[in-house]
Length: 330
Image (cartoon, rainbow, N blue to C red; front, side, top):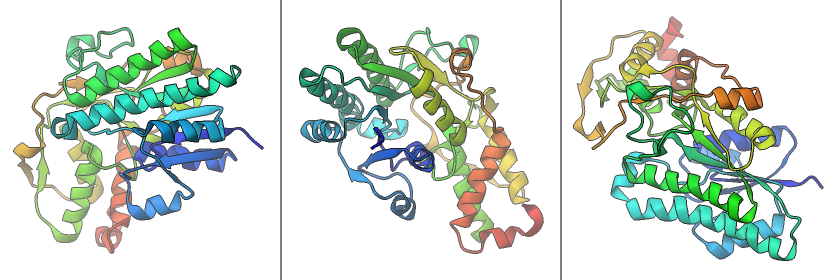
């Protein structure tokens, strides 16, 4: 029997694409989930899934002990910065406590089986850089100071440091994958998916596009390229090292509206919505990926325009008649 690959957070956008890729490659995947952030029908397509709350210490340990995965992709998280302002304690419990439970579960097996030596790819985040993400510091390198600006960022900075600590103290091979803005089909609650989703509704029923801060700059990576980076880090990443995973260029958020207008074949009426502004927001998020490229051979393959088109078409297909109403504009 092939060694198992464990993917936590499999009913999230990134996890779902990763699970599909691994299964298509013939891997024996143990895919866990708790609160899906992708549509229910997409979750059904991912079956079999194992329901698991990473805050459940005994449950996490039991799952690892049962399957002894050779590779672990730890993606389970409360992953929305805006929600972390409302649920700071839950965000910390899931993102920090869940990571501790994962590493302690590995340690528990090693007490009786010292040879158990899985490789853990941890989905860390550029949110840990926080206030360091200033125009004069970007594209930011992995050795930059971590100064998170919201509870989610704080939780991911701790997640990141735990991966380092468990390698130094316990020899558990964890790789810190610092993921910058990424999107793709099934994504929710990010700027690309929100704009595409609202515009898909406008195509069908008309109306304005609600927007937040259009002047921030983001380097946005396609989920397909992100999955490739995670897979390469599982094979070639060095334990305890941090690797930025980011698109090659940053764009102004307002420019995304222009791409979508081209796809929709219409000018959109924009309305500024105060609810879409964060209390604090990094003016630019853009990471240096030299280290990742040099050590793994990774490179992004999809442009921002291609990624936005993939998301927009996905949103249209979820709405009956959406594509037909666009006619020849696609």
